[in-house]
Image 1 (cartoon, helix red, strand yellow):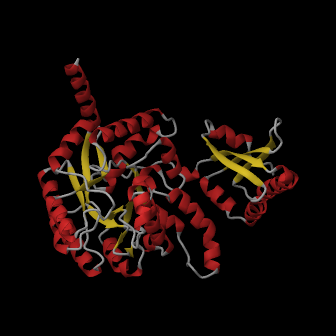
Image 2 (cartoon, one colour):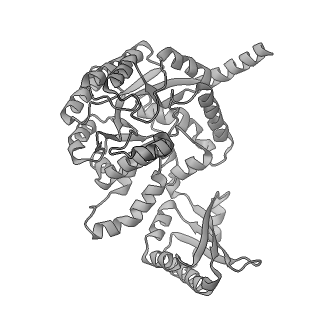
Length: 448
C-alpha cells in the first residue's frame, strides 16, 4: 500500500511539474546572511526567528510539489552591510547558474543608500544576470514612494526591470503591538499596502511605466485601499494634499502573487482592481512547512479546475504570467479585463425602525438619480422583505467595475451614503456570479 501511495504521489508531482508551475515568492537565507544579522543583534527584528533554508531541501520540496522554477529573494530583515547584500546576490546567482531551469532570483539592494543601490542593481543585472530586483517596503524608515528613490526608479525604468516587493518591519514600530499581534499576521499586510499607496499617490509607477511591481501576499489590503483612495482623492486634491493620480497607469504596473491565504474569493476580490494576466503563484518557502505548501498548491489547482469563472485563468496563474514576466516567453497572456465585466450584487440592509420611512425615501431617490444620470448603472432595485419591513434588499447591477467606481464617487451617491449612515443598523454586500451576462444585458437594456 505504501509503495502504491508513493507511486501515485510521484505521478501527481510529475504531472504538476510538466505543467511548469512557477513559484514567484520564495526566499534565500544563507549562513552568511544569518551570521551578519546575529552580529548586528537583529535575528529577531521581524518578531520571529528566521527558518532554516538550504537549496537542496528546496529542490526536494519543489520536486515533490511539482514546481518547476522558483524565484529567490532575500528574506527580511535588510542587512546593513552592502557587502552582505552583494554576497547574498552572488549566492543566488550561483544557484541560478548551477540550476538554470529551477532557480531564478531578484537581487537585493543596499538601501537606504540610493547611489549604492543603483550600483548594486547595475552589477546584479549586468554581471550576475539577475532576473529582477527585490525591494523592501521600507529600509530604516525610507519608504517606497519617497522622492529620494526617484533616481533608483529612473534607472530601473531604463532597464525595464521588474521588482518583487516584500514587507519588512515598519519604522517606527510599536513593540507592544508587535508582541500582541506578530508582524506576519497583520502588519505585513499594512506595510505592503502603505508602500504601494505611497507610490501611487506620487504617481511613481505612472512616471516610470517600464517598471513592473509584484505585490506579495494576495495583494494585502489593496482591493480595499484602491476604492477608498479613489473616492477620497478629490477631497485630498481640494485640500492640496495630493496631486493628479493616473490610476490606470499605476494599477497597470502591479502584479500580485498568491502566497498566503489564497482562495477563490480572494482572487475574485483581486480581479476588481487587476486582470487575470497579473496574477502569479507564490509559496513563501521556507516560512511555511513544506507539506502545508504542497497541500495549498493542490487546493489552488483544484479550485482553478472547478470554479467556472476562474478555470480559464489556471495556466496563466500557475505559470504563463510568470513566464512572460521572467522573459521565458515572448507571448504575453491576455484575458478579458475583469473590470470590464458586469458587476452584480445584493445589498442586504437592516434599517433602524424609527428611520425606515426616511430611508425608503432616500433609497428611491438614489435609484431614480442613478438610473437617470449613469448609463453604467443597469439596475438599482430596492425591495422590502415581507416578513420584516426593516430588512431591505437592493439588487445592484453595474455594466463594469469602472461603472461602479464612478457610481460611488458621484455627488448623489455621497449624499445618500452620508445621509443614511445613521439610519442603517447593518449592511452586507453579497457579490454574485452572472451565469449568462448576455441575457442580463438584454433584460436591463435601457429604453430611450
